[in-house]
Image (tube, rainbow, N blue to C red; front, top):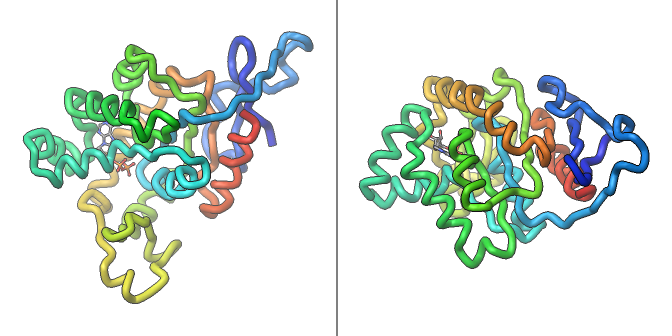
Length: 250
Ligand SMILES: Nc1ncnc2c1ncn2[C@@H]1O[C@H](COP(=O)(O)OP(=O)(O)O)[C@@H](O)[C@H]1O
């Protein structure tokens, strides 16, 4: 496995776990750097972004990462669902886009996420999930001088994602994420209260995947120096182990 290091000029990253996606954006490895030009600085991470297609495992990995790394988990999707639940004008407008699997307009999302990042509980360390999802969203953070120390990209083939979305269920009491086939509820009591997100249907996951695939390349341009690609098409504990390995070397 290769480790990710921040060098004077750029961070050289490669895949973790067996490669599923295209070759990494930065295919360099330590060997391509002339000796003596690397000033490797190990760094503690407390500004982490995690990205990936719907059902790529962001929520599941964030559950483990936020607890073990003492990071405040900020999910753009959760913030929007809370807005929808509160019935505000923004929430009503956001719901239209979310139900269509489209990105909610920036005038709603950007301020909401920036305000959340500036709340006291996030200042010690944040794990930002599902934002940015477009180049202008990334630019909005740049303008606010908000940058991650590492950008984790979970990569899973589209064919796997549809199956994951359709079987995904949420426990409204604990927020825990289950899957009827791959991560079933541990008791009848939990099983009975599980809910399915309104956009977790075969029909709605298609536009969500299209939205993700059409935006992800532009976002990676903004974070190519801190990008760490993770193979998300593995057991969740193996994915988490790969993430830990990558973070250990930062
Ligand atoms: N950064 C964002 N910008 C605009 N809309 C977003 C953003 N993040 C989430 N959304 C909206 O909320 C929906 C659910 O997002 P999320 O909970 O992250 O689920 P998933 O990662 O499975 O798509 C998205 O389909 C989109 O409509």
